[in-house]
Length: 194
Image 1 (spheres, helix red, strand yellow):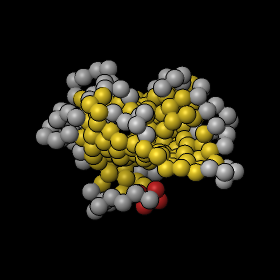
Image 2: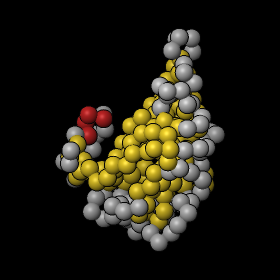
Image 3: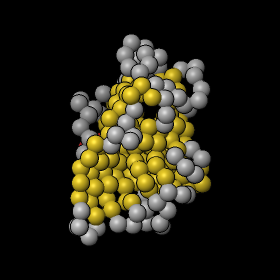
Image 4: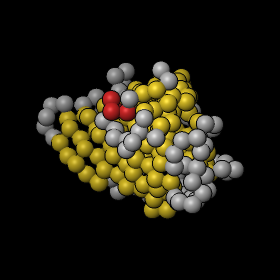
């Protein structure tokens, strides 16, 4: 499929003509999944869809980027994160700000889903929206929303946003677990048609 209707994912793109599929990568005991080409000035927005990301060991799902000409996936970020949870039994539910995964001018991989376990039915799915990565004037904003099935009993919904504090173009993005491999799952990269 070469285009995708963004409304199917409850995402509102102002004046968007749809999504153009640029790349699909499938994990198979992968240390990370990197998109090292295709992020350029062709599109002002890029959209990533995560489908059933399953870890090899209990871990957090994370990402980082490289600015043009840089290596190491360690760009400076300032981020904010909150999480809604609900137990299968209905015994408990909560909404909390996640101080343990936000960053204040940090260079770590940004956590976008926590504590995903290794049960056959445990995984996370969701989206990352990256704005104007080719700008050489402004910082680069992003928004993520992921749903995770955690510890065999709990639904977690993670909301993370922030900015990559660089006025250089962002050209590469890397996704990995904080511990161990990505055992299974797919990540698709789309350009947003405006």
